[in-house]
Length: 612
Image (cartoon, rainbow, N blue to C red; front, side):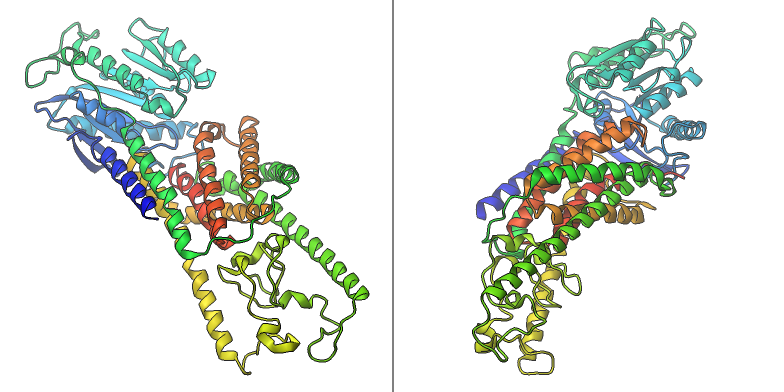
């Protein structure tokens, strides 16, 4: 345990050092202009500098584009990073679900106009020298804005989604950047737009796709080189040569280009990865303190059958979600994804419940047949009554291999770890965290004498001890609430510090609850169906992602879903790892489901755009 804690501390220290040093001493400020949140980054050099507005893409934020703020400010630019409507800290809703209508286009243009106006008002900015940088949705927005405002000196459009944002006339000095692994449509748009004018160019960044292109050093190098050349070159509109931006030593940006490096764009991301790894592994000592290591190994679940059933459930879920009024949820795409998860989870849970009932009926028949061939040796109080067909289930015995594969079918649903680990005990049993790895001590000859009677009921002898035991077990179950609380910290802190805005604002709080409930149902059903078999859990996750991808490509939901499949896969792997770890320490199924589903749903709820 000591070595584990040292490793965790080292990971946390390394991640904090990487994130804290990303700005290299630059000055940051967060402001609100016309109701819109803006992040401003100032260079360390003095004097009036050229300014750059940086715009994020769909489901992004100003924090996601922070590496561009670091890069550009390190090269002498004053940078404003904007949160578009419905994104990041901006609680104003985006007009539609996909940012594809004229109203959304106007909303993005208004946000850019506010950012440009604020940038020009800064005392350390030369208002005549302004450039724009945007990614994906933001690339289209800055391209359209530059086309409508010829006073914009230069523009960089990264992963431009469509060529219609530009024309052969405007804008001037446009660089398009695209990842070599992006979908063909992005590359086609970039090359088409760049070929329309001689003062445009295209850069293809090798080995990156739609998201990783933001962290590629080649992307940042191409951006600063393009802006340096644009600000050092004469203006084509009036034929005059404006003063080149100069550092304190009198050199121009182009002079410094060959001498100065740029900050590593992935530094914040690397720091977030180390923090995330530390918090991911940190669940191990927490789970070890809350529960005991499981003594009885689990038998593998019928994986092929589970994969087939999950496929059917997911297909029905994807089709059903398309028919439901999911757009009433003011979160772009979130309504469909939540409905898809909820319907799929409900169908899997229905299958798990039916399978359990059939198994219990089979057990009943087995017990009856055994009783017919081996009648009881004694009668009286110690013998089972005619109506009790499973007397041995309250006896003190060690669980067999099948004990940790049967969900409890009690009079009231108990959410302890034995819910899907062992056949039902008595009618109102509430198991504690160690119920599924040690024999029960609430009945049997050892507890009730030679007759094997049940413990004393309320008001009878021994009721005080029974009450104390129930209270202790309740306390143990409540301790597992620490697990989902830890999950919220584990996912929110590294994502917010090193990647994108991850703190819920405005309506996102209650939207988070709804999406969490939908994915918690899916996670709980997954645990019930698989009995915690990690391979089967991964199989259901793979089916869920595959069907969602097909739904996006077939038009059942927005095609943007395809672009975020890789982050979603990473989150589902995180969930599966925690499931295996918590099962190892006999955690309750409800705690496993709540914690794992929160890891997946938190990023969805805080990054998908708010819509109105």
